Image (cartoon, rainbow, N blue to C red):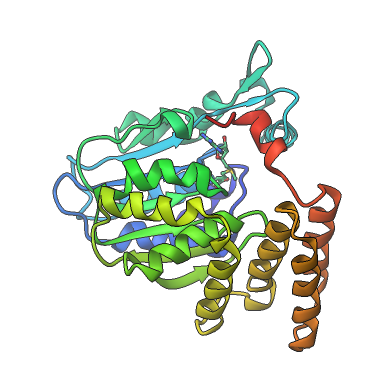
Length: 319
Ligand SMILES: C[S@@+](CC[C@H](N)C(=O)[O-])C[C@H]1O[C@@H](n2cnc3c(N)ncnc32)[C@H](O)[C@@H]1O
């Protein structure tokens, strides 16, 4: 991988995740007309890693495309704008940001960094809110999900895009090991329970999964029915903790405790304060240790009153 090309793009994924995305994109077999897709590109750092891999993959030929979905917009006074501004400053691309009313448009920044891949037709940028995102023609062999941290957004993908995932395809859930991802963790675990996917590996906060059979619309509807009763979320997170505890994980001591933090966050936000407190007691009683990173994550949750949903909806309105 051309590390310099990728690292000049300000972005949010770590080195191990970048290497994993590149290696997967380079080695995964694509049949004619099969595609790659990413949700949540930001300025294109993860997109670049995948694009570099696809460009070096002999099976990713003329008919295949890499679709890159993002709203490429945020509210000037919303929760995401400080990141857009500071990362633009870091990349010296502040001048490329477009201001439209109360919105900041960062598609020109993405186009600046991914220009050669867009010009060659390998990358197809697709501006859309997740709720409005529609699939392209053809099946999907590789999917990188780095936008929704909530099942309410993920379900757009399970209904519209997951039925395009062929058996043996790969789905990477970025920020699976993340304290704000409770309902996402639960949904991914529920899919594993249904033998739709299997957990294969992790890289930093990303979980790499393999599709065991093509998900159907009925599967999406059953998942929706299961998650409508949100009481199942803590139990599913417990299952995910058990499953991940038995796996080899990248930087386990930093990322595995985030699943417990996610459960704690969810319980607190749901108003089940007694269960949230019991979760902290259980953590220590079972001999688990704290480290500075976990404490920082906890303080971040504390500073937001254990809920980030309102902040998120400033940029992406619930539909
Ligand atoms: C964490 S950033 C992605 C980081 C990126 N993958 C990288 O390598 O730097 C999340 C992105 O998801 C997009 N996003 C989040 N929620 C969305 C939604 N509901 N619809 C469309 N885009 C969304 C944001 O605009 C943002 O660019």
